Structure formats: C-alpha cells, structure tokens
Image (cartoon, rainbow, N blue to C red; front, side, top):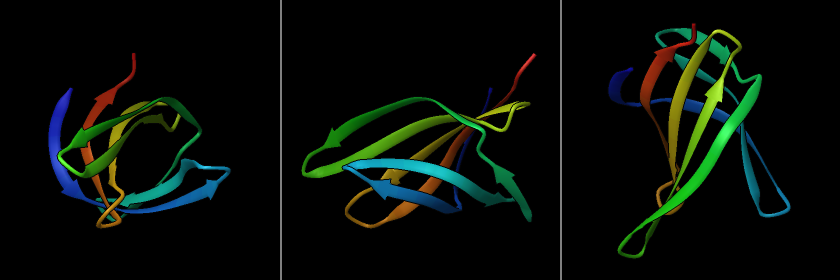
Length: 81
C-alpha cells in the first residue's frame, strides 16, 4: 500500500444521511468507483472525518472526506492481486 495525503476532486451522492463516492480525479485520470468496500467515521475534536475504502475493480483506494471543510483527500492506494 502506498500512503498518500493528496487533495482530490470527488463526485459523490448524498442521500438518506449516507455519502457514496461515485468517481474522483487523480493524476489527471477519472477513477470510476465500482464498489465501496468499507466506510467508517472518526472524530478529531469537533471535526468528523469519513473514510472510504473503494475500488475500481483493479485497485483499492482510501479516500477521506472532512464534513466541516468539504475537502476530499486520497489517503492511500493499493493494487489488488
């Protein structure tokens, strides 16, 4: 797994109190999210950070979304075998 901490532009749906990343842009490529494999939240003081493990079918990506600032970040990338 390659650890990163890079800002990314994410297209997501917000419905019924749930957040689902649909696609994101990284390294001038559009990555289509085929499946959210895991979602968890973490509190840092008053901040709420949502973490998503997603896949495009070939690679696993870890995204984070900070609810206060609306910022998305790519935290890590791991090629699936």
